[in-house]
Image (cartoon, rainbow, N blue to C red):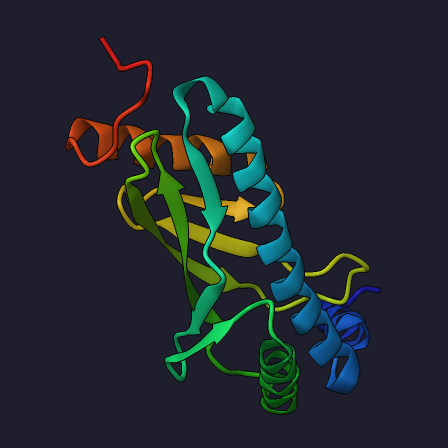
Amino acid sequence: MGDTDDLFDIYRKDHAAAAMTGTALAAALTETVRRSFTLIDELCADVTRALAQARYTTRLAPTVVDRSTYVRLDRHSESFRDYLRGWSQQRAEKAAGGMHWEAQILVTDHRRTTVEVGLGLAFEWPTGAAEAGLAFVEFWPTGQGVALPAESREFQRGLLACIIKLEQAGTLASVKGRG
């Protein structure tokens, strides 16, 4: 390999072979979205357990919004699964398209006051690796962003920062109080 053009040609061929297309890409996109919402559910449950003494509960709201179409769906419904399959297939066919969703985490304090913490989610295109792609999550109240699944602990810290911000504003109150 004496010529630098050979290296670029090799790179392009390797990259093209690794890139997913068609039904494999659609399945990977679907899995990325599904796994991300499942992980957020689990992280919210962990935060609820950690804040048990303060008597906070957190859970991912059942409805999500596809920002490209502004369609609101219950992520536990069959219509969501159908929509997600079609959504993924369209993006796979075009190899482009919006991958931005909105969600809310519902935070309830001991007084049963519930506040929505808005989330923006952007899903990365799967690269062909065995693992599904990543989700980038932004907490709207604080602007903090984290990449899931790699920064799961940072996601929990980000959610806690939102709760503290809501406490400071007087919207939520811990049973223990902050002093």
